[in-house]
Length: 414
Image 1 (cartoon, rainbow, N blue to C red):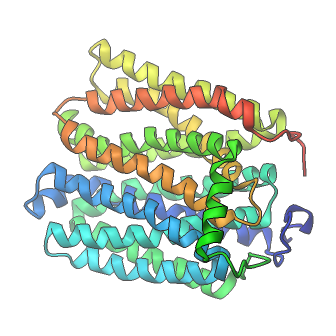
Image 2 (spheres, rainbow, N blue to C red; image 1 turned 90 degrees about the vertical axis):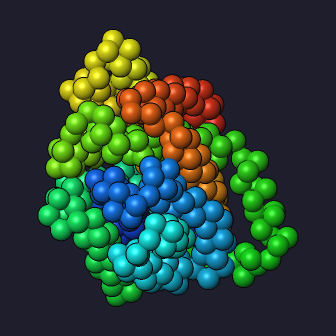
Image 3 (cartoon, helix red, strand yellow; image 1 turned 45 degrees about the vertical axis):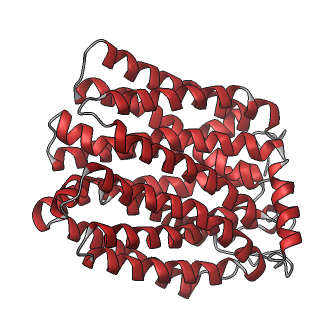
């Protein structure tokens, strides 16, 4: 079975078997949680092992994500000019090289440098994945396809967290980073051998300065882009606050072991996976706008219940983790809807739209990482307050901007 030509929209891309498209998208999108979740259980250990402080350890994450976000601004136009396939191959090749460098890094400064290179490469991979969705699908069909791919991401993320904890316990933090190299090589081989070019019509002027300015202006003055990009940014902001703070809060404040912390991350990934499955059911029954509104309720409930538990003095894993599951259910709905919605209006500039969307998310992540580097104070409050703030902002966007600017499309559109 191949992706039907009716789903391709304005571009006539080659037919890609539906199963292959979902598998490749899942692997490409999963490179982001693989790069972060596998090493989060090792973050305190590598910080101590390289003789660095907490702020320097946070920089291995925040620098990676800043490079990830900024690099997409270059990769996007390059993919519109030369196609998705060459940009993917270049990105995966660079990522593999940077992964080897990170494993062998003898100092925190060199580890930060190699993680930054990983971020640059990761920008090409994830940006192309989002653009490929627009190459092959209409916006609502893209949300459904994205939810399937992100279900695969959830399954991979479920394995990453406990695997990272076990590897760190048994073999040390460098073993956790070594797995990234194996993942990159396998994904590179699949793309090189099986994935054809999906961009039906390259834009030979995509890199011309005047064309770039016009394209960026077109994307940035489109309300639909802003509605969905702010949605994905707020959703990722809440998740990243948890990811960046939880290793220190759960391990050092709440007393979890690395294995227990790995299982904690596994359970949050499982909640996200359930959210992607729920997303497809809600889209089929209610359409895009109402689905996002329901997810906004889940997000706000999770953040407020976590804040309430902390305010009542219930500073334990059993009290703080269950409310975050509600947030992750909402995240599993917001991301496929938001990522496909942000690029939906731009069939001829999906690379640029995807890049700008990704840049916004990673700019927020970098700011959060820098804030947490100074805010982590040996209590649960930075994590709790950050998640609560993003959850309320997310709900407000879901209930206002998305309802106003999402495309009018039947829940049962092809």
